[in-house]
Each structure stands twice: as structure tokens, then as C-alpha cells.
Image (cartoon, rainbow, N blue to C red; front, side, top):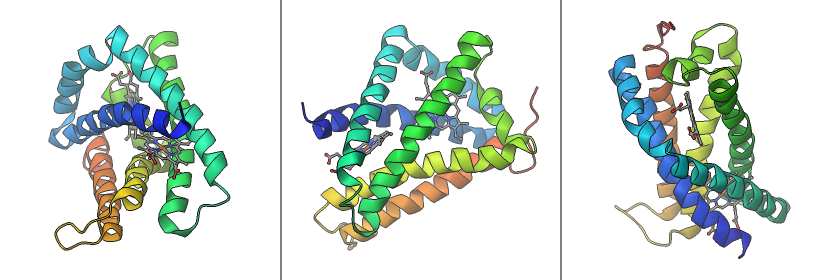
Length: 196
Ligand code: HEM
Ligand code: HEM
């Protein structure tokens, strides 16, 4: 199977999880209890042995096929969206490796509940936040940026009077808004979240 076909199939499954995961983080806008409650409700699905095995396997496939696409595209990528495509892919690869290692080490080695407080601690403590604010922000932006680049490449028709390039920029703008809202929620409206 070609790298691209593989990448497209596994990407769809990953995107389904990531959208749900980001919605979970957005729930913090209604307070920490809402975030914890939604995660409790979602965990039986994405942490089900079968579902989680599939998720981790397709992320492995995504990294492998993505790196192959980067190696193929790196030299020939021209223009804003093609460069964005390659760079967001590279950041996503870096982020998946670190993020999943941290989550799995927290859960299986430290035996912690990797809930809201585990995820948000780095955003709420100085000087950890100097690393974690850009680290998480770029991850959310890279996800939307990757989708924006795919849209710019595939879309051929106008939508609500907007040409494909402008639609792709709108997806990128939605990424910035989502990033801002998630950081606002996870930091207790920028006043600092109390970490038990
Ligand atoms: C959230 C995870 C990811 C999703 C949902 C995703 C999804 C996609 C999709 C649907 C395409 C379009 C494929 C096509 O042309 O039919 C694509 C292209 C691409 N992806 Fe990803 N991807 C992800 C992660 C990655 C990673 C980790 C890398 C790099 C290591 C990467 C590198 C690329 C590259 C370079 C292309 C451009 C291929 C081209 O223009 O021919 N992606 N991605
Ligand atoms: C502010 C940003 C983010 C924070 C604070 C965060 C935090 C977390 C936490 C706490 C978990 C553990 C969930 C659990 O124990 O049930 C988790 C899991 C995960 N996150 Fe994130 N995350 C963020 C963004 C992202 C992004 C942008 C992606 C992908 C592009 C991502 C991909 C994943 C994956 C694949 C898992 C593993 C799910 C599992 O198998 O349990 N995360 N994240």
C-alpha cells in the first residue's frame, strides 16, 4: 500500500480521536469538574484495550508513513501551504513521541491518574510553563495547520464566496481560536488552576 493511502486512512482515525480530545480540553471552559467528568465519560471508549491498541498502532503507522512523505516532499515543497504541510507534520511527529511517552510513563510507571491535573500542571507552574505553553500551543496549531494544508491542496470550489486558499486560512484561524480557548480553560482563565 502506498504511503499516502496508508497515511490518509490512519489519519482519519487519529483525527477522530484528536477532535474528541480537544473537545475534552475545551470543556475546562466550564470549570475543572466538567473536564474531569467528560474525560471519565470518554475513557471507557478510547482506553478500551482494543480501541487503545488500534489508536497507538495507527499513530505508529502515521509516524512511519509521515516521515516517508516528508523525505519525499521536503525538497520540492513550495509556497505557504506545502511548507506548512511538511513542518506541521514534523512537529506532530515530535509531539506524538514526547506526549505519548509522558502519558504512558505517568500511567504505567508512576501509577498516576493522567487526568486534567496531570496534563495541566506544566501550564500552571513557573518555570515549567515556559516550555509547556509553546509545546501544547504548537501541537494544537500543528493539527489545524496540517488540516488547513490538506484543505488547500484538495479543495477546488468556492464556499460561501470564499476561494479554497481563504477557506484554508479560516481553518488556521479556527486553530488559533481553539488554542487560545484551551489555554484559557486549562489555566483557570489565566488566573492559574489550583493543582491538588
Ligand atoms: C494528527 C496526525 C495526522 C493526520 C490526521 C494527518 C493527515 C494527513 C492527510 C489526510 C494527508 C493528505 C494525504 C493525501 O494527499 O491524500 C496528509 C499529508 C501529509 N502528511 Fe500527515 N497527518 C498526520 C500526521 C503527520 C505526521 C506525524 C507527519 C510527518 C512525520 C505527516 C506528514 C505529512 C506530509 C509530508 C504530507 C504531504 C503529502 C503530500 O503532499 O503528498 N503527517 N496528512
Ligand atoms: C493542551 C493540550 C493537551 C493536553 C493538556 C493534553 C493532555 C493529555 C492527557 C492528560 C492525556 C491522558 C488522557 C487519559 O488519561 O485519559 C492525553 C492523552 C493523549 N493525547 Fe493529549 N493533550 C493535549 C493535546 C493533544 C494533541 C494536540 C494531540 C494530538 C495531535 C494529543 C494526543 C493524545 C493522545 C494520542 C493521547 C493518548 C490517549 C490514550 O491512549 O490514552 N493530545 N493528553
